[in-house]
Structures are given as structure tokens and as C-alpha cells.
Image (cartoon, rainbow, N blue to C red; front, side, top):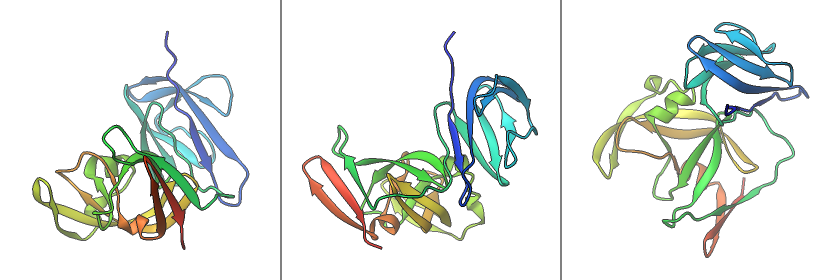
Length: 209
């Protein structure tokens, strides 16, 4: 039987503790988890995994946890990380098959793949990804945005953090659109604080400030 594993790493500023969670079984309303290397245990919705981490939803596809009251819905194999220290100020990205640069990023501590887009004035998220990241985007200011598919509704939000490699920016302006976007865009609200160097199929981002 194939073992399904989700590694969840939560680091808190000023604390050395971390909570590791392996998901070994998913069911409606409960999940079988290995927490910090302990024997597998069945947790029901509402159970605490640690002092700051709570299981708030589970089904056959994913689990939703709350860390300090903030919710994240994660599928198998995804990771969540809060607060890193000792980071460097640059990262090297590799171009994909179609020539686009794809970054393995973290938004508000949750892993997400993003396409580098200097034509996007803001970090831009599809609504489905915003929901997965725990962002209540409909509370943001509503406006319009031009896309390849036409003019769509857009919501302004502020991201707690955006991390690419070891580079972390805080309080990043972003936009969420409900239609017309299939991949999150790493736009200029992040990139305008970087020096960008491209050599062949590699791009180096260097944090300027």
C-alpha cells in the first residue's frame, strides 16, 4: 500500500520548536497523522496537533489546519513554513520548457509555483489559489484588470510574506482575479525590489532592499 505523506514544518519567530506532521491516512472528518515522529494517531476535526496547530477540516483529498488561528488547506506533498532566518539575498531560477521562469515560492508560508512576469504590475493570484492560501480576498478593494481573456474583476490584497528561495519580502501588494488566470504570477510588486540578471536559461534574482 502506497504511503501518502505530507510534511508540515512550522517555525515560529523567536522559538526553536517545530511541528512536523506526516499524513498517512485521510478520511472525511478525520486524518491519521504522525506528529513529531510519534506513532500514527487518528485526529478528528477540532483536535490540536500542537499548542498552536489545530486540525479544522479533513476529507479524502486534503487537510485544513489552523496555525495561530490562520487557516491553510493543503494537499498531499505540499509544505507550509513560517518564518525563516539566516537567509541569503539571491536565488537562481531555471527556465522551463516554454522559456518561462517558474519559481517555487511560499506565500504566507504555503508552497506555490509562480511564473515570473515583469509585465504584471502586482503579484497576481487566481482566486482558487488565494482560497487555498487562506486569503479572504473578497474583503479587498474591488477593481478591474485587463487580461488576455478580457476585462475581469480583481481584488486588492496585502500578502503577509512572499518567499522565493531564501529571499523573503513582507506586506507585498497583490491582486486576486476570479477568472482568466491559470498560474500565479510573480509580478513587479515583488520583482521591483530585485536586481534581475539573465544568462541563457538562468535568471538570478538579487534582493536590493
